[in-house]
Image 1 (cartoon, rainbow, N blue to C red):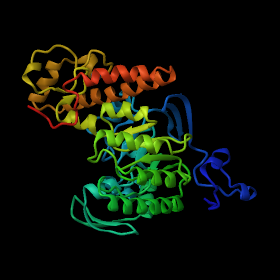
Image 2: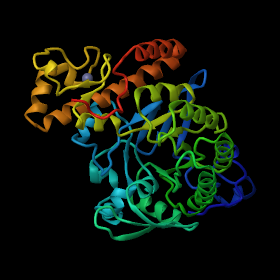
Image 3: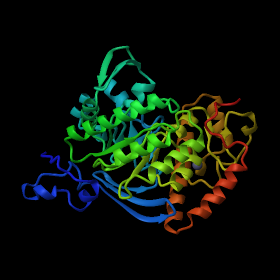
Image 4: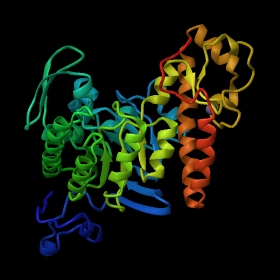
Length: 411
Ligand SMILES: [Zn+2]
């Protein structure tokens, strides 16, 4: 595909996918303007209800994205994932590049047929896992060399490589390679921001697939000046969407919310905004209130593996003996398969008996809980009652002693 580098700004590209000075030649301003359309349908304060059109269907935002790290949402079939109301699933580039290998996935038709998920998919760039999981050998301006956490083999990711791997995987939404630095180290974060910006430009240059939306990523730790500069720079590039990275990595909640608000006030209003790796219930509602459209997090499925569930009473640790004769569902207000069918006593029995069905049933409920919260939020934004929902939800949450879902499992 031919690409004109004389694009002016993303605002122009919304009106026409073609470069105005080269319209006659049909050169595209950037590679995938026509297959992705984001519309803000309703707004209540900063909270937005939107619609994002992708080649594999429409996404209604705000939305929560389950994580299928290795092309599988742990313990669930795609049909079970779909039953929770999930519309977008995330898969990890780092893991799939190492195993089974992106070229194998490509040769088998891409991730959609490979994992049998027919709705939209998102892949991250692999950067976050390289920096958190792999033993890093060397990071430089060109890219990062790392050792596989599986077999110690040596690999190199560059912005160009991250795009090539994601083009092989074939998700609808793909991410630029970025560098996520420890949030409090100013000079390190500053260097990482500059590198992230150069890498973002390089990713834009080498993309070739018109059926993939490329999202830029804003970095900057907890520093308002770095976040502002990063948001302004990334927003000046013609991405189909914009992500906020480097949060929920050790900073306080109030610092995270402040950065989200600051960045979203700079990002273009006519593109989806994605807060990466964030998904505790209070973060979803606080994020939406500050203009976030898309979230992903391993929390619901990870909690399930720790035998814990979301509920209006707070975190339920189902292995506790107090549930042995509890005939109630996990959450009487929940419409998921688990809550419609099984008692807490049965779920506790499965956990004690080490039946794998426990993980499946808890994952179904936990995913549905967050997706249901997002559906309620979307409806409230459309009805302009979001602030009322927010106040009511927050008061209930604050009054709940078991509200921290991220703490380690207690006995
Ligand atoms: Zn449920």
